[in-house]
Amino acid sequence: MNDVFGKGTEELLNKKLFLFDMDGTIYEDAHVYEGTLELLNEIKNRGGKYVFITNNSSKSVKDYVEKVNNLGIEADKDSFFTSSQATILYLQENHAGKKVYPVGTKSFLHELEAAGINLVEADDAEVLLVGFDTELDYKKWENACRILYTKDVPFIATNPDLACPTAYGFMPDCGSICGVLENITKKAPTYIGKPKDTMVKLAMEMTGCSQEETVVIGDRLYTDIACGVNAGVTTVCVLTGEATIEEIKESEIKPTITLNSVLDMYNIIK
Image 1 (tube, one colour):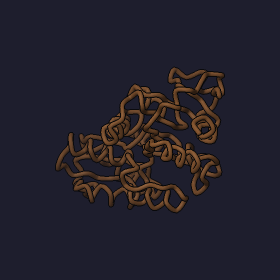
Image 2 (cartoon, rainbow, N blue to C red):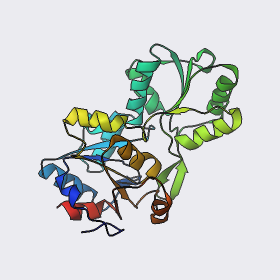
Image 3 (spheres, rainbow, N blue to C red):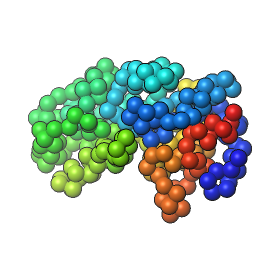
Image 4 (cartoon, one colour):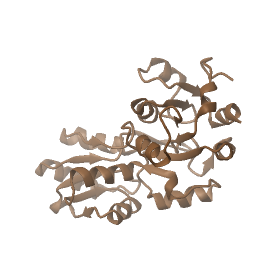
């Protein structure tokens, strides 16, 4: 079976580690895409492993495990590497002990606190941290702007995604939130998460799989596919989320394989 551009897909048969994006790749809100459960079961039955590498920092790993289990997907805490986890590692390595003002959901804040990150109010901030905040209000906007105008502090963001897919279309993601702050203050964040290769490398280390045995599957060129390219692994772009055939044709970031959906991937490897 060939991909949508007529390219062969045989190399997928030799993969052992499958790294999946989530929103727009395997599900949309509470709707699991056709072929997702079958594909994950086939990977497991073939002795492979799957890990979810998501830039969505609105939920903690604990909340993600609960969500996907409720959707019928078998997973535990070791099945995830998120932009939140990558950001925590970055803070611990580069800003250990510093006081952090977070713009994010309660779930995100709980995960930061559990990791020992020192969260404070805006007046005491030594670091500004912005995530995908589905609970965003005007006070958080104001606090973030005040910090950026009055303090010379690191401005860090969990991920550069501009939009998160929903059943009705898209909603603003972390990259759009930061875009507003950058337009106002003229200060740009340091983005963590995809397209950096951190999550891919951690997953390979955890599972003992090589680059040749690993594949990244996602729906965005500038995060998912770029992340796989940066990690030197095979990439699969599915057309159920943000990327379109036209964008793939025009982009400098090219996936190894392009498929209509994860159902096609299941049909290839079964």
